[in-house]
Image 1 (cartoon, rainbow, N blue to C red):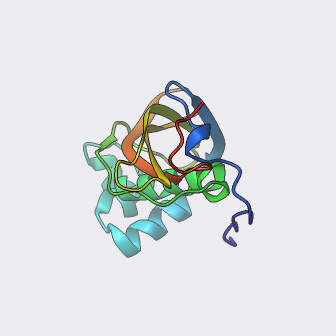
Image 2 (cartoon, rainbow, N blue to C red):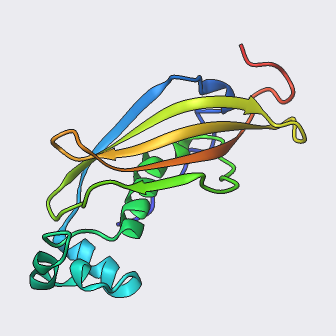
Length: 162
């Protein structure tokens, strides 16, 4: 699948994110082939590779690696808002939780909730957006969550947001 290229002029800047804002993206279907392919290359544990071994495990069936779910969440975030923003990356991730297995055929929806925002003290062209990113399956159960401080360029460096 070709990578989505960002628009030349970003549509979202730090000022466009407000605490409490919730945005949803998806759904995106997860296939058996991608679960096994990712696992074969990056996380070759039996419950990610083989249905019989997975059924015999505490997970009760084939499921995506937690690291695969992080990659899916990142791709959905990128396609949803990051590639069309003034994103400057992130200094890290504060918390990752794998809550339920992601199974072949699951349709996932990403929910991004803005927890807080703050202007950078040292870089007037940068602001931080603390987000909670959650993946939900088709029956509305949260399968994973991730909290991170994302960095975005400011539309008007050094000015207070409206």
